[in-house]
Length: 430
Image (cartoon, rainbow, N blue to C red; front, side):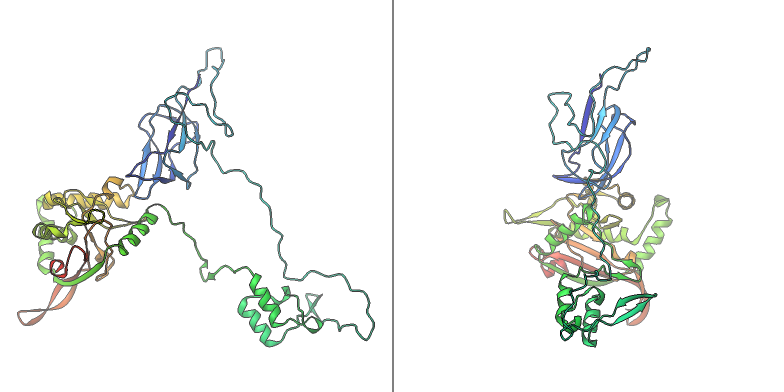
């Protein structure tokens, strides 16, 4: 006899409540094993792949790709004891799960959930709305009136050989209709002899559906705000309107640093490792934090305390297809230059692949955003929530620079430090 078990959407982060099904890696009828990756989901923090906790055969997927599901909701059903076919061809009876029945729970200890059974879109009846035509409906001919009171017939124009009524409207009314996007052929005139008045156009404009905005490239696009992008937006709004931001700017001569980068990149110790200017900016920031630990702290509003962190979880802002994320390198202060280079390379490649685990996005203490990779000189970055400082690293460019009283070309960049002014004052930020 078959035994059906359901796999419910787990909390893959810290207190997450929902996630989006990005891609199913299995389909009904597939055999699965314990630990096999079955689905890729996106939460408010990252995209992750979930493993199956059972051996068996997939019987149903309970959510389509693109659907948002709550934590605890069933997303997959597995038959952990598939049908046995006896030598005679007889099939052992089984408990089945259909698309319109709530499945029987195989064991008492399993949690009960409100189940969305089956897969696919919920059937619905489609009603086609009647199409509006640009030609007004033909009205029954009115009863004959005395000759003296009979209104003059509306002028008629020929279009493709078919006689059609000519719209009566003054030039100002026609201009008003054009400004509102009103087709005068759809408006019933209330003026003399059916003339369309200003009031007729204004009344039509009030009930006219707003036209789709189009441009040279077509209609405007609407992108649902969810997952990483929604979480980032909420975090940025919270931070911007909670922590009083101050940003200071400093131009830095990077000539010696770029020469050091070239020497390090050519050394045997760093063979096969990407050595970028960001590596040295990160190392310099870690040294600065060691000298000034107050910048590596957070504001505790509830207890009215400043919490100074003894460790540095260095965040690096990364732009991904799903939005901006800031994964962090745990205990970065303890890493050697080579160890920091390896950690930066892993962080960037994992983020670009969309595989950053939620744990790498939590508990950051101070961050860097490398706007220079886009050719940008500087900016005023917003603090990740809970952090007191973020450093913007601008593009390194050849620039006229005064050295020993003479103007010479040097490699220069702009640094911008945004900080929480409740914790960091101008002197400490400088």
